[in-house]
Image (cartoon, rainbow, N blue to C red):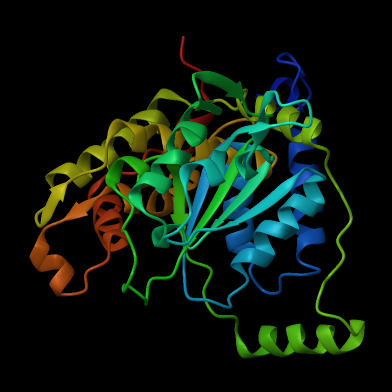
Length: 341
């Protein structure tokens, strides 16, 4: 959707915060997606959603079956961003110190802190619901505070620090469902889904052509540039009508029937963050109502608790968000480009 933006000369060209301009963010986003699509076929919408979360400095929870490229996507993002990557297989025997690190004796018999995998820029926590609650909680401080406390010492994590956690929704034996407090730390929750028949054949054809399993991707953005892009997203304008539209959607989830607990105010902030990132990726210095509508299901579905009978019927929380969207009037697109006094 193309909209004439009266703020474009200021929003797109300025570097007032020391961050990227909107035009630079949009160009960078296109380059990142195009490079990753050399390895991940037919999943542009999902890749863009993950990139939105990263530009908004948020974590991603991917809830899907094995073999749909969850690990490949995480590794691909780390390659194109040119930053450190760690993969942590979350099993019941994983200890908190296996995640955060611990004190060890060096050659001189001195205690030194050996950092764990959480000190990478991008951490893949594979099958996070297989780890015990104690191990899951070890991620909580790192995800929220970007720091680790161990043996009475606080260690700051290198920026950016981003987590992609995966869950297998079809296996429940030996798993520990993430508590609501942990779920709420993820900016969005999403599925990857199976590829179409055409995309699946393209994937096979490319594998046959290159003669090896791994796709080698080139770095497109440095971690400093990603941080600059995150600062640039903070300059995207959110008009009062659009901001109140996001608030109304979240509030609507709290009053719908068959909902035990609606989305929290953190859900409102998540919508705004993702909507600003989507606007910047589209080359706009302001958020449209359509940005809010697109990101709302992924930002809110994991923050809603349904009544028990809804789970029995197989109702998905995302359908509750869609019902909320249907009940809330959409502001005019023209209202999105007016700054409040």
